[in-house]
Image: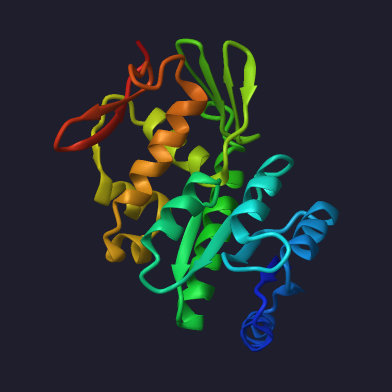
Amino acid sequence: MAKILVVDDEKLIVKGIRFSLEQDGMEVDCAYDGEEALNLAKQKEYDVVLLDVMLPKLDGFEVCQAIRDFSEMPIIMLTAKGGDMDKILGLEYGADDYITKPFNILEVKARIKAIMRRNSKNAKRGGQPENKMIEAGSLKLDREGRRVFISEKEINLTAKEFDLLELLVCNPNKVYSRESLLTFVWGNKASESGDVRTVDVHVRRLREKIEPSPSDPKYVHTKWGVGYYFRAQ
């Protein structure tokens, strides 16, 4: 049973999301402020956290950043309509995805299921011995354990950062457009939204974590005007 944490200070919204997710057989916990959300996230590992930006006590960005200190559980930010800066900041703080308010509950459920489906596929794929460990230069990617090492030092990546790096590493020298990365990593729904900044932010965060010099990347390279590709120099 999937475990979901829904965080919003608007109780009617929480009630509606909870009812709909429970109809699909999911286990749902609810929090109405940032402190309560953080405490719940420390007690239980959730399959997905739905996290509103505007919260009392601690805002969504603070909660997201704090969760990233101890867990890589997937986080979907709920942002205000037209709040482009909220979307970008959410990704910068470690969110995997975002949904703009007002939203359709069917979209929320589709995003949640897409994340769980991809994580399930990754877990099964990791069972193939010939593919579970990939090495490129000083980078080592463990597909089974979903762990990344640079010079034997483990690098903590979010779920989406790992998915993005895994796709690139498994297809070296293949250039992916930002639109195709949205499709492969975030799913068709994200691709239809056309917000390629999501990809740019994740690539920038990924480089900050794995590159000795992010401005002169060793692994994740840019093909100007086209997209991104992986090559270990």
